[in-house]
Image (tube, rainbow, N blue to C red; front, side, top):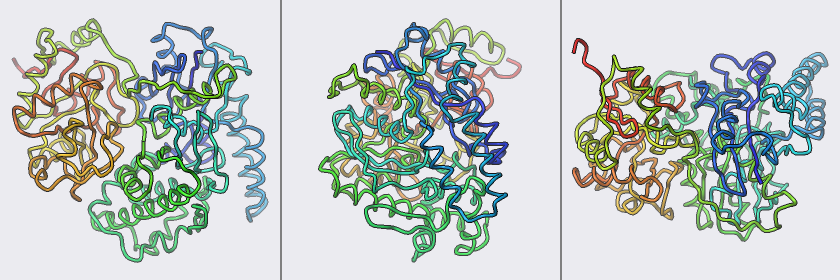
Length: 600
């Protein structure tokens, strides 16, 4: 069975801009962001790519035409070979009726209700409704799908199935939390033999969204909502939350059964409505690290308290011992560690596609396990890898190099061992290296195939990369790569034995804080990526060779891009980024590339 999953809408940006002001810093304040496509063949995930990697528009919400074409081409098939098309949204008539009923119950002037009704109706009719999605698909692909072969998957179910698949298709409980889905922002439940059971008394409405409140704080601190929340998480390490915490005292109310509500409803028409309340309790906004870190630490503590409240209730409802955490809130890796260490669950898994980057994958999995042709029990254990996107052969690398021949020079094709030896030697110094190999990783984090690497032994290397390469705020930390078997020696891993997707944070052991200062955050922690020879053989070989040369067991790994740009995908993308920054060397497949010296 071949299942194509796709997320993204042609007119989402246009309609949310027109009706909800999603422009400028609000440009990601819409549905369908992190568009992309995935292909599942007989239960095996053979390809997936985010549209931003191909159209070069960060977090794009556009219909994923380039992604769809690539995954089909990669598998050597066309639309006629596809058995099902899976969409990670289900805005059906029931959702529309519930949305209208909710609007009718809000106390506001009749004319304002009519305006809002028009906004909702236009977005449903032109973007989110089943007919609109089918028409969009036909218009952009030239292929008219049979409606009977299109599966509209509830958004949070797609998130849950992403985590389920990535964790090896094992029975697990789950917590899903994000900005919003069709009607909800969070729910809990469990998956047994591939079938989802939700605990309905755990539902949290979109009006009470924890993710959207965190985005409100992101906006208030001067960052881009639904994009820069990780900056708030990083800032939290510089401060301490006030006691009592205003967010816990005046913004959110906890209820029995793991539920919670916000004191103000999240409102698409008024995304800044929490700002007066923030200023009331924290004072007027200030562009100082002291002020921003205090607010950030307070909202970070709120996330931990609220999600622990949810997990504590979930523990009483299920006898399963594995927890999946998915949805946009799951990108908060500081909180993920807190959830594991504070719960009875033996392990917590957070996938590389926990945010909406993964819902196209999850939708295909849902369609697969729920199809009548499949058995009631899904026991297939997939081989999971994040390296699912395009790769480029020697011919394509040479072609790209030829186009930049007046600006770069490069070695003849090296063997893998030669690449490892030469780059390890370079990394003993204070250099920054672009590392490009194999199939591009999926998800928001670079995982070693499109990465920037550096030696964490230099205390100022973080400032060098932030200023000269990434062009981003100086408070931003960098993640370390470490061999999986070395991780417990360097980091206090707690109950985790691996962290392959940078979705957890761990304290650095005191004896290593001066060994890898460039990868240690101000609070003494690191967002770790563990690697193995089986998962990333050449990267693992590089790390091991570097450690032999330096006695430093880690390398800095950050995404190969500059602020505001998607991670590089093609050799041309890599060369453009290399030449527009102060990256010192570029590894492009099996060639070592340097910048030509002017006048040489």
